[in-house]
Amino acid sequence: RMHQFLKLGTTTIECKSGYGLNKSSELKSLEVIDEVNKNHDIDMIPTFMGANTITPEYKSNPDSYVEVICKEIIPAIKKQGIAIFNDVFCEKGYFNEEQSIKILNFKYE
Image 1 (cartoon, rainbow, N blue to C red):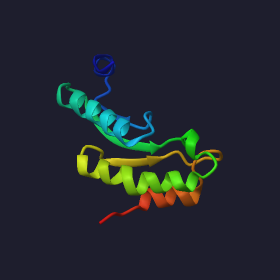
Image 2: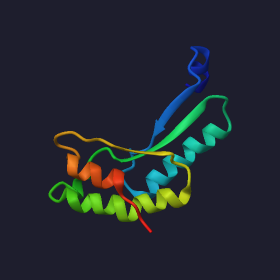
Image 3: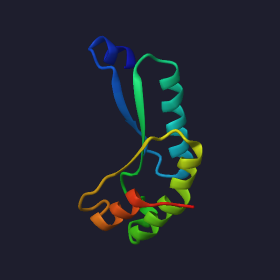
Image 4: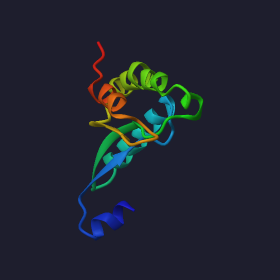
């Protein structure tokens, strides 16, 4: 796919994590993005998108999942040092505005 992007004139793409929905899967996704980026001519911009849906175990208490994202996953992503951006799926049935702001503005010490 990366070769096809270049062939069609695309030189930079954003690549998002967010499909594993847990810390280890997010870290692994970003590692794969980083590895491909290092070994291919296309520029890949890695984005953490662990907040793309609320996992089934947190459906009844999504604010608890927001806490997991902020206090467990984001610090691990920051320590890994690959992701450049953080993205949230802010839409009815997913993350509301307040939750999205909390995730996007989260600062840890």
